[in-house]
Image (cartoon, rainbow, N blue to C red; front, side, top):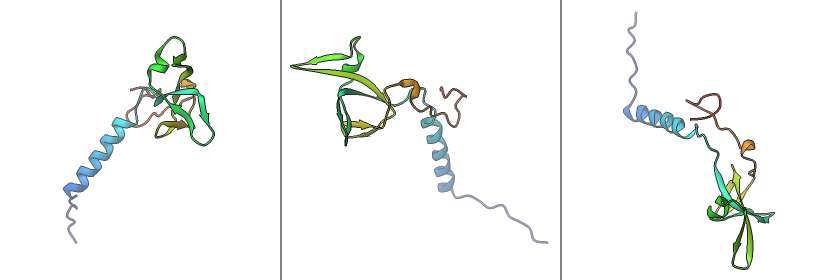
Length: 110
């Protein structure tokens, strides 16, 4: 009868596995979807909406004056961002992807 010796894991395997589980726990349970402040009037079919300073979205009126141009700043959720442009997102926060995951409650809140 052959005696089985338990296989020992290398410390690097244990550390990498632990770090992966920790990263998943920290990043997958956000209560707020990713958002960017964009100018609704700046849409480009190839680039999307131009990302602007968040102050353009924080006022009570969404139309902001910038010199001679007016800007219609609004929050754009769960977009693909490339440089100063965002596309494939939504202006409706309730439509933004709920990313519930490891360690999250059923509502996706943290």
